[in-house]
Length: 208
Image (cartoon, rainbow, N blue to C red; front, side, top):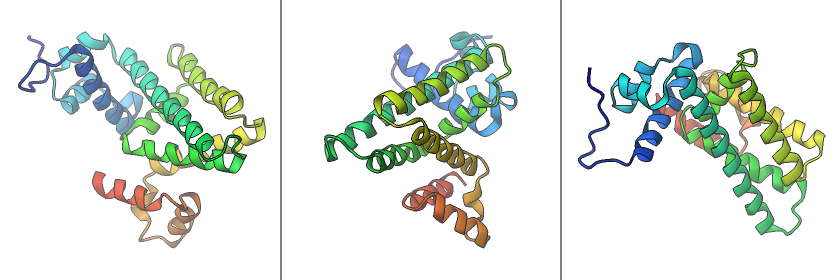
């Protein structure tokens, strides 16, 4: 059986091919979960052969760990950008301004389909001997950034993380699908996404 790479008309660099497959894997893991995803499904989403994916990562577990690292790295980059934005507004931004900038950038990550949901999948695998420690390290990195770099108190970091988990839960449930049909859902989403609801609904419409 031969192993094929994407046919783009020109030879892609190996790192570009890896990014292509990781983006597809992020979508598949986000939609199907860790146990429901397969290397074959990732290969089809990326437009490559299944042996090519296996050769690149070795196993589904290793591929998921790469997806997890990509997700948390993108999230941390987004948070650091938000910290710079809030500092540009004021040399010593208050907690509300900082929280708003970080939350805004966090929601923007939803445009990378499956990224935040892949993180949620990792957080549900705490008992896994390989994935569990990596998932805990990711959560620890986020908390330490909020505490040490963003200067949040433990209580403020708790509030931010709680809101983030609520956002992820609503996205994972596809609550936006019922926004026009269920008054209670409309009320909840209006409260949780006061400024980003049009963005969330546009993503829903693009993915339906």
